[in-house]
Length: 280
Length: 238
Image 1 (tube, helix red, strand yellow):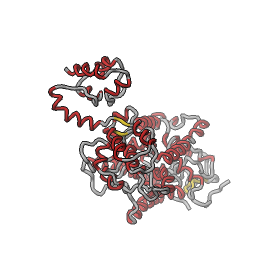
Image 2: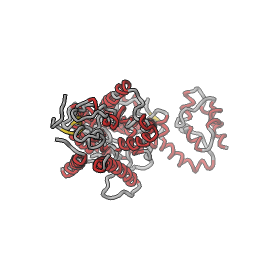
Image 3: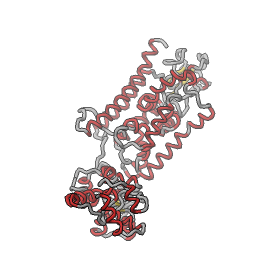
Image 4: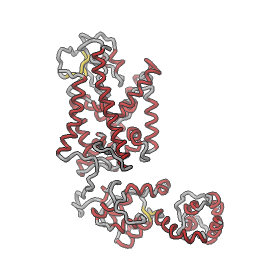
């Protein structure tokens, strides 16, 4: 990868790191607040208050009763809308660029890659893997239905993201710790296992991939079929077999593009309209 | 038109922090509860605050103001030593931790149902929710509740840990002279006195499944004459 490309791709890493540190700092400040030592000008919001998925699970309650599910506040709803706006335009940018839990998994993947080399992220046979990817929709339906009927945030008890940022609070259920541990271990053999198979918010945002405005598009005329885009995709999408990516698993990380891994300029691009791409 | 890494970075920051900024200016951005519960949407109580929306972060003082339940009754019901207006509902879970371990959860939902029954408001009676003894007594003596509700609270009561601890405090001066097993003594008190569970179980000739059980209740459930084991248990302390 040339220097110019490296500079560009660092922007994503910096963005991910920024949001990871921001969420960690807010969680730390919440702890300090309980000790009466909160840092001024830094939020002391709970993780639920700054998680856009809280808004998704509150939609039913908001429509029927005008309030939110327990522990969810206006901020979750606003962030959910921001996530949807981004998803309509560019797909699940929240997953690929913002989500701190995705970032943690991605950082762990670097260790996995060093251990397993080319075998990393390719352990599960494609046919089985494809089916497993729909589990997250079952989880999404179950979580939304359950929360709508009980109005309690039951997902917290199995949420590894909550466990990661609240492990010191004593409020984390054992199941959440177990799932967090499993996710960490699996991240060493599979890239973003939670995102791929279990994340209900990822499932929700993934739906927008079917009709988002800016899409990942491949120019067949200039493509040399080296399959670098396939190798680069953390979600195992076979970009080289498509002219545009409509896969519900795409996280808009742009790793497959000519700005990152594709060796040929203007071949795999994040764009709207046909431009000079030939689409068969 | 294509987008590059830089554009995507700018768009992300603009949309997320723009949304936060705009809604903050408009006063919509809130990361904490407004402490305004939902209201009944229909029926006889339309427009009144619905106790089902009481959150764990609500303090007893706030509940007292919102639902017009005297703080003295709320504190007594949940066996708080003092009338603490800043006591948060979610703190009940810690006080009644032992009870929850035995599948009898006393927490925010207990407060919701207590407040609803206190004000004769409709609420779903959750089977997994339990109430301290004084809460049941207040509802029985101060409010007129339906037979079905009475049956529910009677079958969902637990011994109030704090009251028992208060009793223990009061009794502690007496205990210095002599430890007594009374009709209200629970197993936990014996264990706190340093008596081993095995020793108690040997006298009872049975297993103790719940440390918060009143010994007398255990005896009547298991066909044991309380007076016959009372002295034996007291002797374990000596």
